[in-house]
Length: 414
Image 1 (cartoon, rainbow, N blue to C red):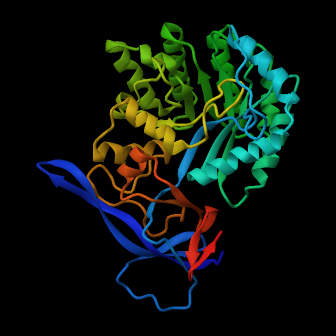
Image 2 (image 1 turned 45 degrees about the vertical axis):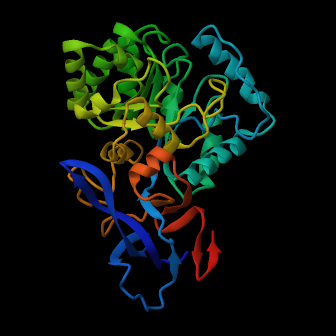
């Protein structure tokens, strides 16, 4: 694509419409965007005649939203592209580990191809940044990491990514510290772990080692935590405490954090304050049932919240389609986000906090100088896109169409 181009007839949100003090609709305006070297350099009303020789593409009134972020997935685990198979029953998480360990090498479609199918699916859904966990355990060494790096290399210039070095079978349980360190010198950017108490058997030692590894390699942390009740809550407190001690504020996340659904009263206030002050993010796949943390309450208490799809047809779940906007719709249903403003603001959970309008209804995206990363959808506003899971026509990364198509002088451009 040209380094300088016009994106014509783009629908942007410009404000909220109020009645009796309540947001009842979203104001929009058609504009033309000038994109140079991957950044937005000019915005002009649709009424402005553009008569220069700069190449032009027509959005045909599609709504522009900030492109999406998939904050939790496992590219190495997906079964997409392989023949259908449901899950095998597993009495415990340890049994599930073993089932998956045996199953993945037996699949007919190679891991790199399956990962690429999932990445393509995410791109089409509007995603331009992926955080993937990749398994590390003695039997596979760094093989899965190298395979996923190859898959991601196919998409250079189409999206950005992070890789979590994930010792799923236990950081202590499998003596994985050395292989995690090696992974962090070969493309992984975050240290992962799982259930320091129930999998590793020593919560304090496991969490401490997690932070030691992150500190040694100047990496972030993303910990899987499924443990419920007091065990899980104690783990969360320890993670928050060590985040401050190691001065890692803003670089630590806890994925799943089911125990947050169990906190009550003063302890709940204490934990949310600790998480907010330590800037520890909570990443949720919005599971059905009683395991989902109180995400809106966490958000209200200034705890960073993000949503990720997690299992996308794998050995852990036969469900999931890789559509992060659909997963956000599940969040909205689960927590009764049914008003125009709540639906619109929920978009931040899949965009790293970016929304077209701030809470006061002021336009804050897009702005001059920002990367031209967006998804063009068939919707009148963000609220409709979230509630109706609107069709995505084109995903744009730094000004380039990386999925879908638009028209250029009446022709399709891919």
